[in-house]
Image (spheres, one colour):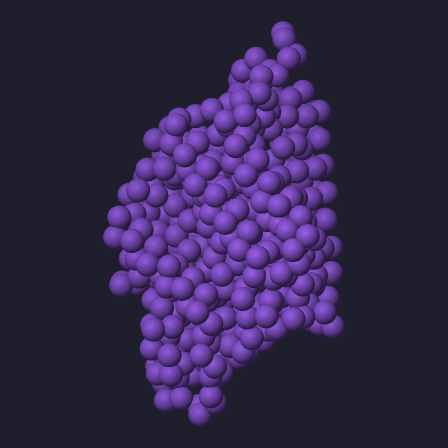
Length: 488
């Protein structure tokens, strides 16, 4: 066996662009030291990363860092989709960060550099072909967010949120690494495809208690990253203590990264008969607890945080069909994986639009406030309020929010195809439960105003909100485009 690895620099181009953006931002901030220039360079780098990822992905699958058939970097349609979405989310968060950076409590250079570093981890994550690359990429996505959460000067809430997030994430990473080490002890491999082939070919390994423990640890560690119940307690406090744009990034790009990592190990490495029941239980607990607790929230960001927890349950639900033999047929598995990816993409776009609307309606450098503060906001700012309402309706899965409606239909369809009708019923019941708080907030936007004056939204925030809304509408009208890429 040859130990010389081949290197395909074209396949690595998206990673180069993302990492180059971080380095360039650091140099520009050092040499020019102008906020507008630094933000512009970061935005151009994020846009260039998205374009580069799409172009490389359109050329077909490319592999590099290979030893025989085992490759540590696999760039395919799904990796390109994840990279493009994460880069565009970074661009969107930069756009809504203008009021925060102009307020002066957050240094622009460090802020943009850390966002670019997190984007680099997200771009690499989709192409990871082994557990070590996967975990390092996931930590590269997450590590800058510890600092971003607490980056505002003299913010006690931000510092507390950062410490909470750091402690929980360190535990999650430790658990995941322990699971990976045990899998290596059992199989002698860390490459995802080799792990899957080894465990599928040898029933004696699958039956070992050590294998079950290893699989459980890996799934549990990654469940922290998507804030799945019971590994969710960090999310509401962290989102509420973080600056609003950082909370938006946590709820979108960070969660998408966790989904991509979890999907990679479930699809390519871990036995479905072991992971299926665990994921089904996590999905039921996550969507139910998230919706029930969201009903009681009075703070805007905490409501969106608990809503994000519930949405993670819907993303995990298709993978729960692997618990049944009918859900592990090739067609059923392909449908489940595509449904999970498509739902995650639709969710993060709608969630970004919701956070952009909150940023537009709140004071610069302010927190999300309470739901009472948003009363009548759509009367004062019809376009912003309308976009916010559309995002909430989409998250609820109602028309005219076609993206959210299609996402839930896709999840239910994949569950029925896997003969997991009971789980499809749980999804439907939770979707009805979620209507209570989504429609309550939407109605509050159009209620009689409370009399509190609202500042005019910043132009960049309004543009980001408009673009996110338009993209959500477009993919709602033509959702098959996302589903086709997700199925690759």
